[in-house]
Length: 548
Image (cartoon, rainbow, N blue to C red):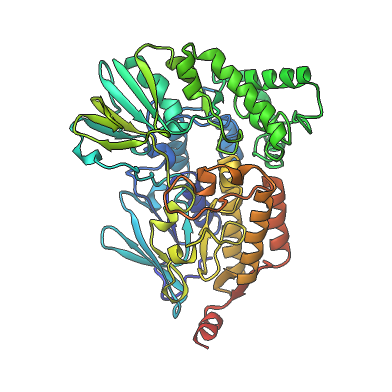
């Protein structure tokens, strides 16, 4: 039953109505009978899949795995049409989930959280929204996502442009028509790689402004195989168990120990097979040492470079699109469909803006050095302030009014990637220093939501009100996360994994690289030990210790 603190309006406030927020609401309200209010900036559910409507937006995990596992009837009833679902279908799925569990009645739409402040006296959070309202809750759970705050462009003048400006992360619901237009796409990361082939089909001229070429590999999408789906649905429990016991959260099982322990011919056969299979199989189901051994990584990086040069007819374009200077998979590997073929069109060009950065956006186009590329439409695919950006945007303040931005001035500090010392009763779903973006996100979300809601239930059943990680547990987790990261090649590359895509952002590894199975086992051990590393207490005890 609900155990609402007398000074709280509700038990829990949740931000976000995507995969995380919807499941959190269902678990709190329908399973634990706790009063819950979800706050969502969009006009409907969907989260990432509500905002990212750009052409080509699509998940990079197979549909049958990129979905909830918590309800067997839902798993059996829903039918995907493609191997890798597109944005419209994923959004329909989340809308269906909201309908099926009657979730919208407890979601406040069109409202943005602008302040989340802890009250040391009453042991509650006060959540302020942009409509001037506030609500007090015992717990605050962030389901704001890892990639939901667009990066601010590093060049000026965008407001001067007289044409149309589109942002991949906030695409117009009515879509966009590029027919016969001159288009600039700024950014060639995952979103740009998905959108560019579609824009190229319609635009009279397309100029891609690329700072860093990516190791993009084939998605391998197509209609879903009914027989394969029937087999998965007949064994969904075992399939999900296998997925949860895999590094990436998908049930791949062909990975080999070392790219250096086999002959060049055998290695080539393996790479070809994984390339042709598509998805993340080349990355995660080829050789275990590619993220840890530079020589092993060189073998796969050289292979992908060769495949890019095969597909791009113009040698000059191919050279610009071929990545060098960093290891494969130390940036999230983008998956593509006809991306490289788009550059075989005479109407599509690519500009290297690493050697000569964009100076400014003018009234008529994009100025790079002494040349202005005149265009009618600018598409910003410049990425996100990943992992920490969505949390910083909410002005979260913990004990004594400590801003989270100050606490994390030198990089994120968490325990298990889900809670923060000096910020009691605050849960971060797939937060920094958890497996998050290196795991199948719906399953990662379920794991974190289950941990958070089980902890709240544990407090309620034991007459407790406050849970907070100890400073020592937080330090130890940070040391472990960094030690594991330093055993890999990731820290050597400037990527959003390291916070390096945002000027002035502290450089720190944002993800736990020990793998989801090890992470899940660690969390289970913490719970079995009575929430080791956490301080649990009644509100009165915490107040007394704070005052003293």
